[in-house]
Image (cartoon, rainbow, N blue to C red; front, side, top):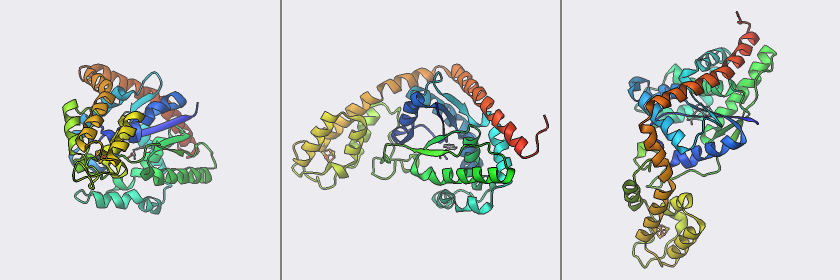
Length: 329
Ligand code: TRP
Ligand code: SF4
């Protein structure tokens, strides 16, 4: 089996954008690839260093969300980045040969600095974000990395780093990673902007049935349907976008037809979507609640996964040290 590596930053509980945009795909990949999944808590520190008190809690919540969503430790290795310090050593060693211009050119660098203008991100650590990501990937010699479009420049830089390392050391030890683009297009939030915790437009995986229904009612519809008798266009409606994620074909046809002919009202349509969403995440909510009572086992599983990951990482690092002439044992 080919190896896949995927990481996610702990930034709070998972919402539908995270689930349909990434995690749902991870669950499928477990059966087709040898998967290494990890929580990139050091990457969270690059933006949260000034108040890092939340990262621990976010990490624990994230692990619970991932297991409840179907990450299966029998099939995949789930680990915590900071529990495998090899990531830091490889990051350091690669930093010696990484031209500053490569890092400054990565579009997420300037974009994120602008987006998070209230934070001081003119830091060494933040500039190195993509290189730490390269180290994450290269330690496992992953052939494929499932990512969204925004992450493509990071993968491109990782491949450049591989070529530079091989050229400078004369030792070919890394695999050039390729992206595995997630099939689901970007998930909108209730207000049709990108779904994001910071926009307050997110529906969370563990939202209660009542919260799901209330949020369905708030979700933007086709503005052309001012009156119940006005026909609408589901293609410009966020409720319909959500239907596509949680409803079956029959319901989709019912909504499409009913919308275009004004045969149904938006409230009917929203109620049907909410009902399907409640059902869709029912098993998740139950498993999630069970994990809340089982912190001890959770920590054991993280330690176990991290130990498994570390075996692979330290073997790679050994070769890197040798190639760079600093192997002492
Ligand atoms: N930068 C990624 C994101 O924000 C998270 C990440 C860190 C990652 N290291 C990785 C993803 C390695 C894939 C592989 O989504
Ligand atoms: Fe959207 Fe449904 Fe209303 Fe059409 S009927 S605008 S698809 S909520």
